[in-house]
Length: 217
Image 1: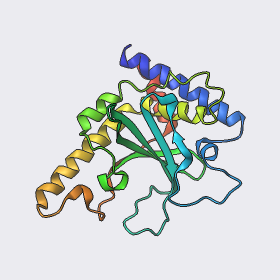
Image 2: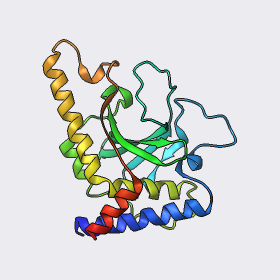
Image 3: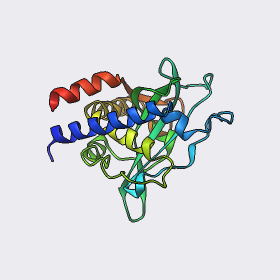
Image 4: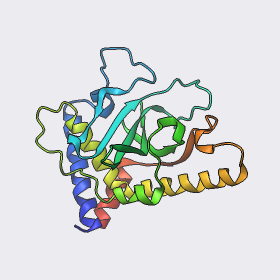
């Protein structure tokens, strides 16, 4: 399957999810948190994480206190999804791919990467992570009627597939920034420096992404 065909199919899947949520008067954030309970900062939503039908991906949503030292937030950010991919099966090793900032209306603001200490996963370089963007299983999550979060998982992977080029940019920028910081600081482990949270970011606009997909198709 060509990249153009993947992008077109992912865009169609994304539009389907957006329309389904609009009809139900909901959004991805409302679907993973319990709107009837107070939102707990730093808590992972949903409790068992998003599992993507055990295809080697997982994610969770959470938010940080606005006044947290060293905290970074997009303007208008409510919280963000952290997305992980399994980079080795035996034993299972998960690597943080990228994070997606969401606004107070449950709509995406932008992609960003964080320092290693933030998530503590198995660290791999941007070249390896970028390869996984070619095999996003956005089309393998249909007909999971018993999965409460199916539409969120489909929406998140379809958005990731449509945003592959933007995600590649923040991944490569992540490694570039780390390399620069490591060259300037030889005494500390930069990846564990809690004074460094954000490494790279890129804003996105959902309608612009879909327009680009239409041109590619």
